Length: 225
Ligand code: HEM
Ligand SMILES: *[C@@H]1O[C@H](CO)[C@@H](O)[C@H](O)[C@H]1NC(C)=O
Ligand SMILES: *[C@@H]1O[C@H](CO)[C@@H](O)[C@H](O)[C@H]1NC(C)=O
Ligand SMILES: *[C@@H]1O[C@H](CO)[C@@H](O)[C@H](O)[C@H]1NC(C)=O
Image: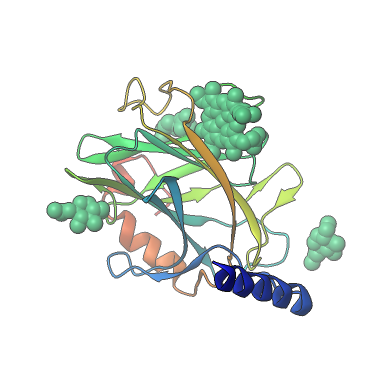
């Protein structure tokens, strides 16, 4: 007991001395989509995790907006899982996802208070054909988001090492899983983390997006290609 406490104290002291604080995320290379993600595993119940992965394009000019790819993996016991792009419930883009048949649904939201967040049309999402599924144990989605990294005068630095995020978890499924405007009940747990975008850079971001969205881009009405 005393020994482990001692080691923690030394580690804390070292980080104060060097001024370096590591982000809570780590690097994950996804063989399925080809992206290099920076990932965070949120412990939503003791020993149970939801994984949040983010991939970023290379060479984003300072202060400019940019798309990201988000991948979320959750056990079927997760009714909905949310990510807050500015690290708070209120006043920043929220991405809320849940299982929908053998696929997943993503909903764009923003909250003005601690009540059900409303639709947020300033962020748009293109679901991937690759890396999106639901089975008897998990559901997972991979999605491109345009509008998740800037809102108002805030811009998430594309190579920021300490970007602030929050997650929320609810065991209850939304009322109408096939409807992205569905209502859902309040979270059972939430927490905060810092995400390192500098390790999530992908030089081939655009081509990996094209490959991942495949034919589904047309089905979802994305005429960009
Ligand atoms: C039905 C929808 C929701 C309701 C009714 C709701 C309600 C609330 C309430 C009442 C609190 C305050 C808790 C406290 O002070 O102990 C809170 C905090 C919080 N909620 Fe939600 N929430 C909802 C959806 C979401 C979603 C989708 C997210 C997405 C990540 C989220 C993230 C958070 C976070 C991070 C906090 C901590 C305090 C803060 O950042 O403002 N919530 N929520
Ligand atoms: C980016 O924004 C910051 C804060 O507003 C500003 O200080 C900086 O000059 C901007 N950089 C560029 C290249 O516009
Ligand atoms: C639902 O999907 C439509 C069509 O893709 C989109 O225009 C709308 O913004 C989405 N709404 C939400 C709340 O995600
Ligand atoms: C179910 O989905 C999860 C998440 O995508 C995946 O890791 C797992 O291999 C899948 N299970 C089966 C039996 O395909």
